[in-house]
Amino acid sequence: MRKTVLAPLCLAVLLFSPLPGSCAEKCVQTEGEAVIVERDIPSAKTEAVARAKWAAIEQTVGAEVKSGSIVQNFTLVDEIIKTQAAGVVTSWQLLAQDNRPDSVFVKIKACVEPKQAQAAVSALALNNAVAVFIPAKRPAARPTDAYEESNLLSETLIGKLTDQGYRVVDVAPTGAADAAAIEKALQSGNTLTVRSLMYRFLSNVIIIGKIDYAVSTKKGEDIGYGLSMPLNHVTVRMSYRIVARDAKTGNAEILTAGAEQARGVAGSVEDAAAEGMKALAAKTAPLLLDKIASFIKGNIKRVSIQVAGVKDLDANREIKELLQQIVWVTDVEEKRRGEFVVGYPENSLYLANSLRQKGRFKIVDFTPYSLMLEWK
View 1 (cartoon, one colour):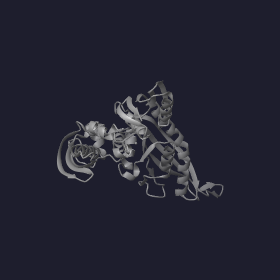
View 2: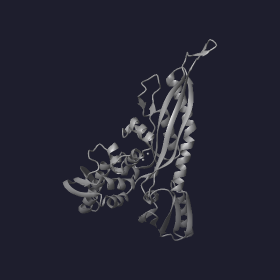
View 3: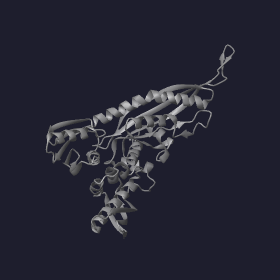
View 4: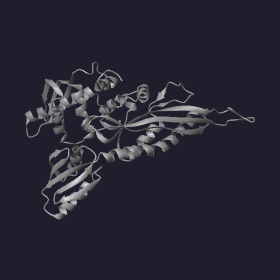
């Protein structure tokens, strides 16, 4: 959900990786398993090793969201794993192999180049995956240096994003970042911190910010004419940035940055702060949603789809209707029988997966801008 003499990617890894010396090659032990099809044990072993290599890549980057959770039930992910792992895993050694009744299990030691690992993992990132991290400083009635990393505003925003169909990752519970690092990043304009979070959560968009409180007027405070304030007035201020990663260059781009504030009134400071956060969430959520929607719209690409086995116009019409039902497909243009062009903001890998899950298509081949299918 990005100025020092260090290389940018090395600094990004150093900020969040638990592994020492992150700019050097990393060697880790991982496991992989694959189903045996038609008693073909060698092929199952090859697939299991490929999965173990990918696990090594994810472990090196420190990915919190695994590729399998994004491409659920997706057989084509094996092809992506084999493609992306090539050249990233510099060497590997088979430590153990267990030929089970229905599968092959392997354990390997793999050495991975971190910079290339980051590039490989980011290939599976989604534009509609949003990472959110907006820690809130506790009200003045509590220690002023303490933060609540999960709070009413961030939870409200996450709920609104989820309702709009985005895949949202709440960074706070993972411990992948802390409020002090975020505050420093915001003050310095450093997007490297943000970029490292994107690698970890396979996201191309992150909302990052911090919330401060100030008690404007305390309950019981003299306001003149013999009157005292009956309630606490708390001002809640949020500074934030939405940063997106350019899928082509990998560079971080600030979509928007700003500061907003709202007030809350209640008997206690905590309740007044909560009321202020509710008002702030209602005020800022539409602005943030609009910026993210504009980013995704700007990344829509045209994907050519060729479908073999379409024998009549009724089948062609049915295929067009199925394409229009795919999540995040913006439009479908019918070129001729069995040929279509669709608008899609994500990797065509996910479009192929969605079509395969419809049960009427066989995936023949795919590239970033084209799919070849067979109509069942």
